Image 1 (cartoon, helix red, strand yellow):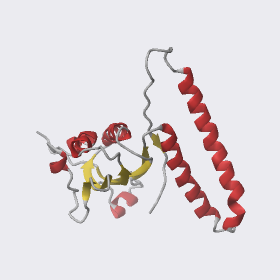
Image 2 (cartoon, one colour):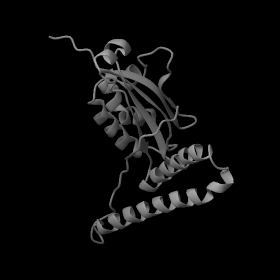
Image 3 (cartoon, rainbow, N blue to C red):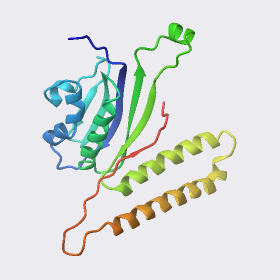
Image 4 (cartoon, rainbow, N blue to C red):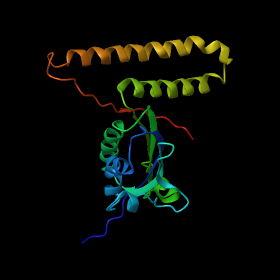
Length: 208
């Protein structure tokens, strides 16, 4: 059997507030795509990060808070695991929350790769989880406003940016209205039961 060196170190970072009735078993099942990808047989086994100095995956049941600062070695297939995890966490989350995912190219060597004209395949994305599409859009909106203000405050006083924030709100209002309309059109006939929904959005954002 050929030896395989994963091309990436993948870091997952975020905090998600969960419903009070969520159990440790619920969290373990929701995070199954992650710990199974790491080759573990349970969350308890797979919660440790590849780096000892990172706390890994922790669930504080008293605060109903899931914390992730966890690194695993892997490849592009990990993106599917993240998508599956987000779908699972939507069912447990009490509010919208961002989760950062960073891919570090382990095969890239600064000197040798640059001399050959190669670029690192590092990548960064942010995924969102939440109990409803509205909750996910709200956290997306909040983070976008923070980013926009942080950039524009280099040139304008914060008091001058109210109009910019209002325009951002208009864009998200339009997107939400379009989503509601699409859900209304997709509703089953009366009496056939409520339509379920799950949300997962992505947007690149550099926080550090």
